[in-house]
Length: 436
Ligand SMILES: [Zn+2]
Image: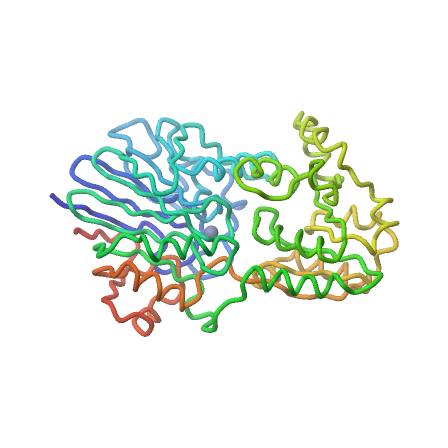
C-alpha cells in the first residue's frame, strides 16, 4: 500500500498552488490557487479568461486537468483542503463541483466570504467543513493534521498528510517574524518527525538572505513616522493583512492618532474579532473610525448590502472631519479611494507609507495612485516585511522535521535549494507523479 502525490502547479512558480495526494481508495487536493504569473513570467490576469467555461480553461492550462473535480461524471474527488485565504491558494475553487467537500479554517472561510462582497472575483465555497489546529481529521483513509502557521493571511495552516504508514508535510505559506511567531516556535517543539517528503515553500529563496524585520520593528518604524507633526499619514496596505493593521493601530496608540479604516477593512476587523483579540469598530476602540468610500459604498448599495454600511454608522468619520483632523489621523488607503482623497482638503504634504510587496508597485493603478499623491507633495515611505519565511526559518523547519526528502514548491528558485539544505532535494515537474 502506497501514498502518491502530484504537484499540478507550483514546482517552479509562486502562485496557483495545487497538490493532489492519493491512496488506493481516496483522493484529495491541497489548495486550488489562482496563478500569479503566466508561462512567460509576466503577470497573470484572470480577467482575460473570465468568459471561458471550465472545459476551455483546462484546454488553456489555467485549470489543472483533474478527474472527478468539475463534472458529475466518474468518481468525485474526496476533498479539497485549503491552507489559507490568499487567492493563489484558493482562487479557482469556484470551478469545483459543488458536491465536493472543502476543508478549511472557519476564519479563512469568513475572509473569502467578505472578499466576495467587496471584490469583483467571487469564490463561493458552499460545501465547507472547518478543521482546527492540531486536530487530525480523516478524508477516506488519508489523515490530515493542520498546524497553525504564522503568515500574512489570518488563519493559515501547514498540513501533515498520512496514509498507509507514509507521510507528506505541506508547509503552505509561513514565516517566523509576524505576530504569531509563537506558532512557529511551538511547531519547532512539536513538529512531526522523519516525514517522507517535505513540500517546502521557497517564496523568498533567491530574493533575500538576511533575516527579515519583525512586525514589532515595523510597528516601531511606523511610530517614528507618525511622530512627525502636522501631517496626515496614509498607509497603503492589504486590508486582509491583520498583523500589519495591528502594527498600524499600535503605532497610532503610541502617537495619539485616530486610525481611520474604510468599510471594507472595518468589516474584516469586525468579523475576525470573533476569532482573535484585535481592534475593531466598537466602543472598546474609540480611536478607530470608519470612512465610507464613494465607490465601495455605491457598490454595496447597488447589490442591496446597505446593512453592511449601517453597522458602522456610530463610528463614522466624514471627509470633512478627516480634513479638519488630518494631523491626528493615520488612514488605511488603496488606489480605488483616490476619488475620496480628492474631496479631502488640508492633507497636501502628508506621508504615504507603502506597506506591501514592492512588486505591486509595477501595477498601473498603484503607479497612478502614487503619482497622484506625489503631485499633492506627499513623502513616500516603504515600510514592509515579507509574509514568508527567510532562509534561516526555512532551515529551522527542515532541521525540525528532518524529512527524508525536500520537494521545492511555491518558488522561482528551485536550484538554490541544493545550496541551502543538506538533506536530499527532489526537484519535481508539474504533473509528475511520485510514489512513496
Ligand atoms: Zn499566502
